[in-house]
Image (cartoon, rainbow, N blue to C red; front, side, top):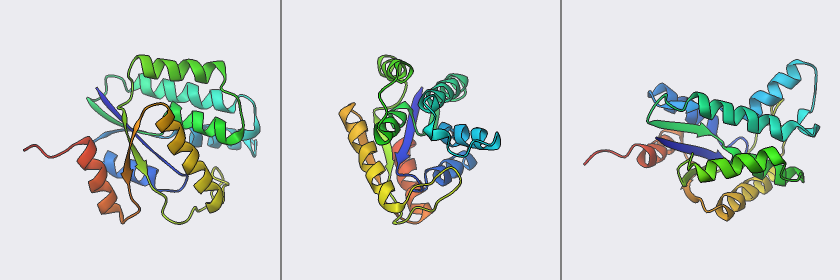
Length: 181
């Protein structure tokens, strides 16, 4: 089983890439944090990321999705991973919870994700949404936190530079599904 992670700054185009990969028939898994935020906002909670349980809710949904897709396909692509959730906790100034720590230990010991991570570079802007309330400058700081977090945990970042979608998609495909020779 090969599970690749797309990561990078908010607004870099990870979700658009993920959807294109899905259209091409690859098994894809959506980002958990966006759904946790959307569910809470649908219940009338404006800023769920301020809640203490926010990080653990993301971790729980990430784990659930990873386990649900476990036998779905030999190749899977995830929009973010628990390492991204660690980067988020760091960015928010939160301690590593017991739940997050245990999940990081599990994904490492069970080798859940490929050690090569597709780092989707920012596009030079960050468009705010109801779930993404971060300025472009803040997103660059968050991008750096992601890079440092993945590297500290021994992952190899594969740079996917800012470019038109076909070029980015080709760069991702060259890593996850290289042409047979």
